[in-house]
Length: 85
Image (tube, rainbow, N blue to C red; front, side):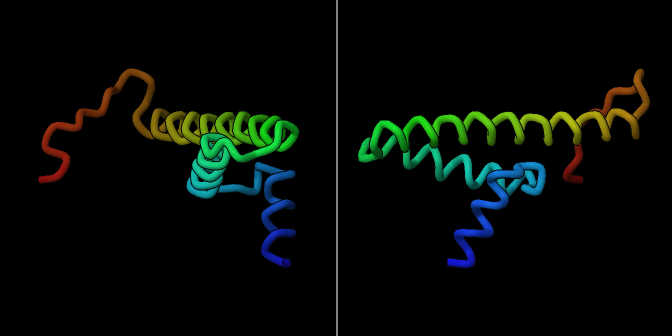
């Protein structure tokens, strides 16, 4: 019960979710929607949550990209050739 309250609180304030947690929850939402056993009202709520989670994850990725660009400078481009060497 405490776990559900924590998850509900996090979903009501998505800013508390990390990218990984948001993405994992988005995957769960998609699975529930694809299952087809969900009532219409619940499906609409899940769809709305999924949209919010997708936007949250996109914002987190954009934030990470901006951080990397700041480290690189605006004119530099990082190459990935040989990055595992």
